[in-house]
Amino acid sequence: MKSKIVIFREANQPLEIVSWPIPALTEGQILVRNEYTTLCRSDLSTYGGKRKEKSPTILGHEIVGRIAAFGPEAPQSDCEGNPLCIGDRITWAIYASDPTGEMAQRGIPQKAPDLFKYGHEQLTPENSLHGGLAEYTLLRKHTPILKLREEVPLQVTAIINCAVSTVAGSLRLAGELKGKRVGIWGAGMLGVIACAMCHNQGAQEILALDIQDERLSVAQRFGATRLVNTTKEQLTDNQLDVTIDFSGHIQCMKDSIEALAIGGTAVWIGGVCPQAPVPIDSEQFIRKLLTLKGLHNYNLEDFRTAVTFIQENYQRYPIADLIYDGFDLEHAEEAFQYALRANPYRVGIHINPEENCL
Ligand SMILES: [Zn+2]
Image 1 (tube, rainbow, N blue to C red):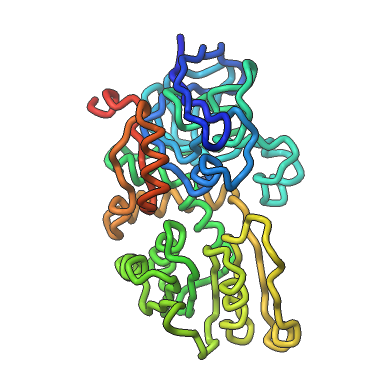
Image 2: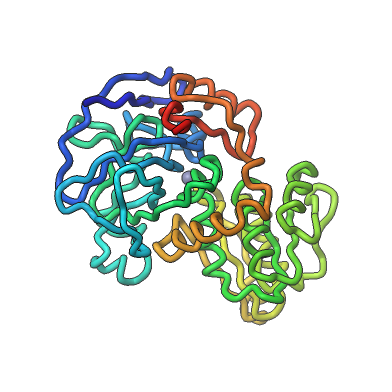
């Protein structure tokens, strides 16, 4: 049995579509027939050469698919205890790591020494089918899996295991949001999902800050109560309880600290690439009793929160509108080029499209 896969070798080289043998399943593995993959910002950065990834590789980690086969001693139930059967639609965490390991026990499984990360592994004869731009994904032992409800649109479920889970993690670090004043820097995919999740958790005021009016008006549809175009307006009131930066820009990260009220918490997610240090006024930071937290990826609790949020709220917020749905696996190259040129929130790729008609 074989799987079509899309191989990324290096930036500015065409993607290659080849037929790859599906290995015999080993202990704890589950074979998934992929249905849909969305291109995350990190996929675009790797494709465009801004980010270095182990290569060759199979890009794509925002994936959703159906169980095709169970390996020996593979889990028969998901993280919530729901039974898993052939044909079930599932999502899974971006990582697999031993849940009994020290880092997992500390609540940071995404930093375990035995970490395996979908869409980020080198393609070798021994290690394949680990990315979303392929007909099949081979789920490794210790991959957190959650079964999905059939009625939730594919496009919306695909973004759960990176974008939505990461936002869920940032809100976990931010603490209780009910009645709070929240500022969100960067109204891209993560920023607008964060507006929706803060709104859903009962935040009193949700400020969205971005440099594009169009993106701000989308944020408003996701629950933002005040829109700040930072090219035209500067925040001066500094009365926010929680600030979250998804933009990664040095000035925004600095502003996200200065905008906090006494006792406030800032969470940084966006600035994950190498750049100059962010200057922080230590005196103000100390006198205002501030807290700053960083987050890279997410843990199991965040993944579960993300699945629950999407399944309960996909009709409350216009999440499906964020995904440009126009490509299949054969046109993965065009999908990347469109994503880089038009810069929609997400570009989605149908994998095995005939399967979706069943
Ligand atoms: Zn991602």
